[in-house]
Length: 334
Image 1 (tube, rainbow, N blue to C red):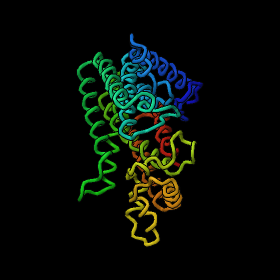
Image 2: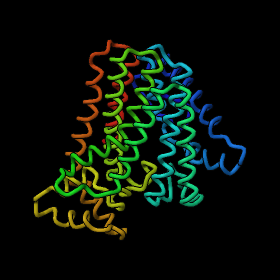
Image 3: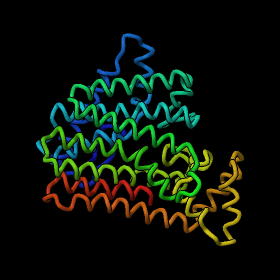
Image 4: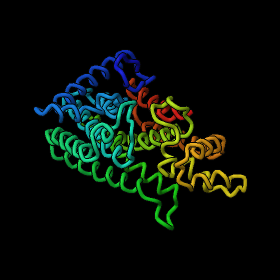
């Protein structure tokens, strides 16, 4: 999908007609977001929209629209559900910025930098409330799904901020964290698209599984980009995850190495990396390490797994676009 709308993620497999329908649906989603975040207090309105207006790919609502094409298309309920999912995602970013002590988000000052931690947390809570208010109009099943999604999302964020428990496989722990902190909301975006377009229960289940795998693949690719990108290419400072001490997949592979030649890299990865020179050296060594190839291979495998879920579906423009989306998500990582 090519678009003049800033920030919308491309879907190379979308036909011109499908692209037009997706763009129209996304414009409707934007209107719902603006309407439901507008407040009589100008400061609250501004804070609500701070990250929404800073950009972003609208990946999740776009997925909701796209999956709806497997049913009867983009209905008012699909639009509302997509807006609820995107507001949930935006709310989580406000909390992320506080947890990560971030200064920038999407090329703009983070919410905690622009305001303060307390305001950022409360605005995140407010956006979660607005999302739930939208979803409540869609019926009790949608409310239940939203609640279950929120539980897993918060669980994933808590576990992501803590080391792997002793005795657990670090890579399995990492993948389970990604399924909760990223996969579940992408799964819900896809699930709502199928549900509210009248798709069969079988297609709803298929879309949900596809979405969770796609979300994990998306985060795996982001983690690779954090290491591989040059400054400014991704809108995120390279090595941010390393500096925060996050054990992403390339780091875990590097730490698992028993090659004595990796001693310097492992020492750096286990250190605080507060010094810019140490961070630069860690990035240099990790970029050249086989750990990156292993992480890329796994990322591509997860993306293929998402595509394989859709195999039983008949051929259609929507299926082709969903397959292309899975491929484009993982190939971002090179």
